[in-house]
Length: 307
Image (tube, rainbow, N blue to C red; front, top):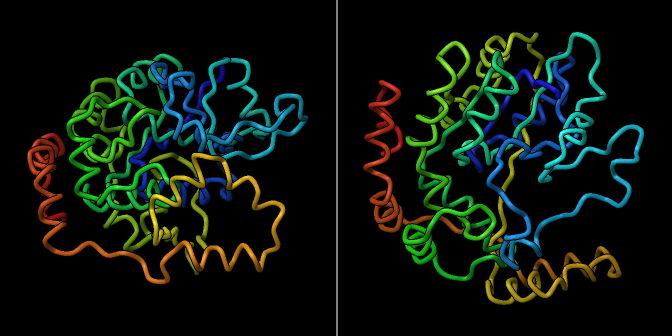
């Protein structure tokens, strides 16, 4: 069994993809060939995913495990221990093994599983203003046709639903951090578990990167001057997007010219991003106030920057 040294476990839509890109460029780190293998989230079952999730799930390329040097893939749901081990075969001597599955923060089983496999691992969590995280998540889901209601409608719907990975979007549940972090604290002390605040971390990215590399016990590296921003796109007609993606019509874009695809995007997506109004933000924040108070007590610090 392979024993990764570093786990970046979320939160989803809190900059983990950017940090994973930095990790992949750091010579002291060997990032798993599947950035999010989700191996230790044992309760996740692909077979039970909703049709919407299944339509969005990118399957591993045919013959993926027969490749000599595995292709880098964003996400997979790996169950086989031998396959998980293969994700780190490219590592050189002295490199720290790392992976970045955001489902581990949600999973009730992952903390014990990770502790059993990698008792000395370093675990990093980035948490973001819960409304901004949920809003970013909502925009992505709406873009891909997974939802068509308003932000508040979908947030309320998720608030009333049971949290199941692959069945609901978990807009609400993934923005409630206290119980998730408490689970990880049961297995990893402060010398192994580090909590980052998104708004602080990305305000001075190089300084934050230097500190987190020190925590991981790897040499730091110089970040690119221009940091890539992952800006979402907002559909003009959410139900049309829902039809396109659920009917798998997106497949046919491979037969169209780039010019035609660009024209289609101009028709389907707004030019300027949607912005949360103060009134909607306040209503959305009410869902998270209790969790924020619990989190402040748990971390022993104020999170007033979110209010």
